[in-house]
Image (cartoon, rainbow, N blue to C red):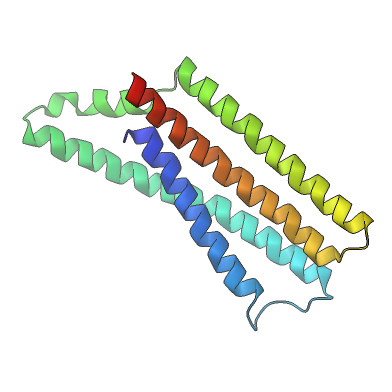
Length: 162
């Protein structure tokens, strides 16, 4: 598995773990009152912010460990002079990366749009606003997961065919 596949897989696992924590919180005793939409909206905003910040921190830590692993591997082979080149080539974005990200982004935006439209339809037919908020949140989470998973599949398919 190449660096970019591992990077996106790490992002997906982090998002899943944080989503599970949110579900545990949302169904627990410390969750806001069902009728208090303002508190739920704040909770969801904090959750989205936490996902962003924690994913960035995890990616930084991931990159540090990746760099250290490359350096250790190069020192075992007595090729320390190649360490920077290996890391730089792993981080470089070429036309293939742009195409893969564009495709994944296209599907992710479709999922976000679908989630939003579904939440509006739910409200239009008399659904509860809190459930509508959670439908929109689920659309965002599934879009993020789809983006990561599509990237992993595309990179692995490219490696297998390359």
